Length: 334
Image (cartoon, rainbow, N blue to C red; front, side):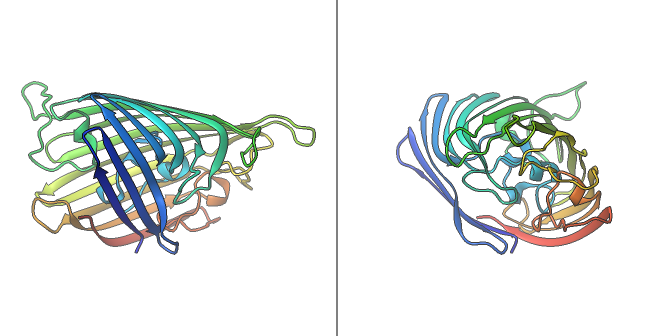
């Protein structure tokens, strides 16, 4: 089993809610992946505890609501994981803005990349949606036939659009247990969906940098990633999808920070993913249970790129320059 999760949300009052998620990834142990309290008042929300700072658009989607059987190589490289901190959110029907303060990326939980603990970390994400459903229409990647969105061009079929962007910055090394590295991350994304179709384009860039010390020179590594994916319902309960993702070879100056993506490449390499697949929703009109299959061809060497080997994404350590994976999976969420 690739992944199992148990989620519990409790609304204590109209203004207070608790959330907890316990889960396991293949080959691992059960652990607390998220645990936080939400304080809500009108359009404001304060969240405190162990949660995911909102950065990459794809990370905001539950695994069972993705097109493919797992996240893209771009999400794997830049995933924020879960961190301990506090976040303030202003949420309206079409617009939201989140400002978070935490102890660094992936310090509480991460499925793939290791934690980078910081003295402080700040994260800001904002997004705006056009269409009848507003932001709530983009909680999932898939878009079934007959879904209302509200924008029409020339009297055609209605559709919706969401534009989002986020920045993250953290610094460490002055307190015990933190990494002496400055990390800057930025991403923009555009989502569009209509009657039975949907598409997501995201562009992300990251910089890891360290200052010079008495024994080591200053170092910097910069990486970028682009992901384009979309799906179409050829029948009411049968969806086909495709994607193209690329994480460009890292740009390195000086001594790269330890633990940065692609920090020790022997031969720098782009890493690309080409994928197609389908999902059949077993219960007509419902999304709880689906049978999926996807095929992905990976072009690039893991040793010379920023993309980590990942059993979840069927990426093995590889120096030959290419590999492929074919997967079949049934997923259920109730």
